[in-house]
Amino acid sequence: MDFLISPAFAEAAASQSGSPGLLDFAFPIILLVLFYVMLIRPQQKRAKAHRTMQQALAKGDEVVTDGGLMGKINDINDNAINLQISDTVEVKVRRESINSVLPKGTLKKL
Image (cartoon, rainbow, N blue to C red; front, top):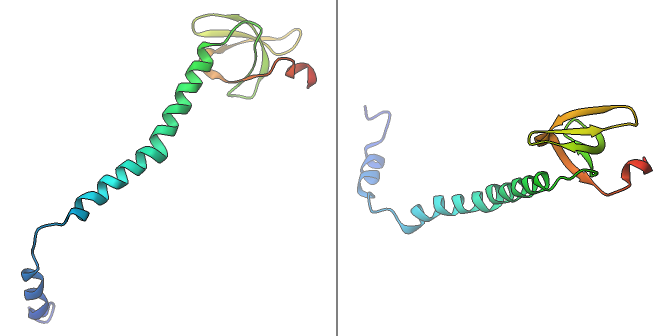
């Protein structure tokens, strides 16, 4: 079996067995901290802001849904919102499907 691994390399590897250094433990911890700071925390802030926006919806707000419908809120229930998208058309959408609130008067400008 000496043709696969030379005995000199095998002996050198066996003699270098020492205790792991501090850097071996610090590297994964640093990666986890960076992962949290760069990805998880900003996503949590965005989700919290979106939940706050959805809870603050009121009658008369102009909104955009996830599907791209733009309209004015006519009625709000616990789970559903009646959204007026034109003078004669009113649709019912889930409260969670509201993507953003538009500034007042935006629908008239379009």
